[in-house]
Length: 221
View 1: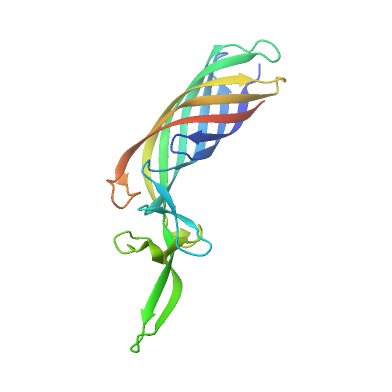
View 2: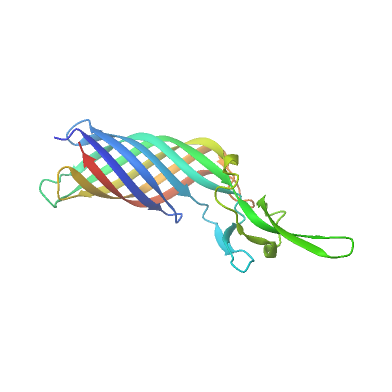
């Protein structure tokens, strides 16, 4: 019997974005594996709406969004085999659960903003600058050209610590005993004692519940 597993996966969640994950597993018994789970996921507020900026080659931005959220989840759990994959091309069914810490990485939103200044003679001079998006100040959509570069002022990102719990069912299949594939579906609940400010005109959020479906490639060792 193989004692350890390495898993590399991608998933999509119900906010319309997905994530990447890595898991390391080792057998506790023949049917139960302990799991170390690490995942980086992009999570959106359900009220986010993408619109086009005002320019000849418009870029999109999200109206009212002031922070972009990434969740780094690090936890432990177990994978319990329900049915066994006893021969080539068969499938096995697992129930999985994880609990752990969630680190929310909040990247502030910057936009390319058109500024028009007039001199004493009434002549206008316009230029484009990168500013932190504030819907209370940047009210004229004709002056918003779109999002600035993702990496602009990324060092101003902040982090908040919370926790998560996850439950899922997965189907394992494969042709060879040394490697396997998984299709997994389930739900994740993240909680933050200090709410996250994602949207300017919506309440800050402490709870995030998402459904997800994912694909994983794994190796038995």
